[in-house]
Length: 259
Image 1: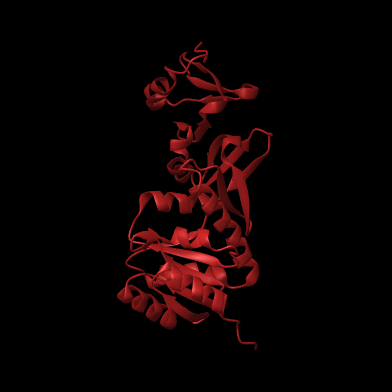
Image 2 (image 1 turned 90 degrees about the vertical axis):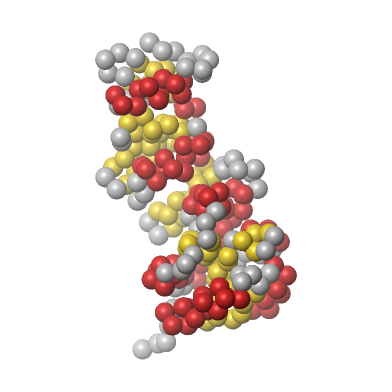
């Protein structure tokens, strides 16, 4: 039997105790990882990356007076995967979720770390993670106005342009995304998860199973059975308990018909 190829990894964290804890967990529970170095700041990290060319970086988001995002922006080549580690940063985590990059919360649970590391078992998976990293950096550079969404689909990463999503519909623990080109995809993510991601970007949950991009709303039907009429005359029901919220969301919108 062939010995599994190890994945070379680098830890970047400005706290010695955190690096020591993480390296100890890796050595004990992630035997497929070859830890090639540890860095406490961006300059050290750049030097070690150039020297060892690691396949995986374990990055603490907060690094003294900067973030590990600055490290990624400084590197011309990003031929590695990344697992972010953070105590908690709501904006950073949201950006990470948009790109589908892996992250762990401190204190680190070895089982969660082991599961995250398992995503980097071969080179093809690492290459997919590199694409996710590019989306993250692009979104972070757009002044908090995220443009694209990375979605894991059938073992690969699909890049979705957010303003081309017309609506989303729950399907058990999955969600179907409908696009303006009339295509759709089924994603293994709940509608609640998409609501948390997209509600600040012009998307509105109007029903237990429906969410719409308000940019595509043509009119609202306010009769006994309220409904949203989208472009292409697609009709989406509005639940009774969400009617007031929908009304408030659209009453200032000029040019919207309210039959």
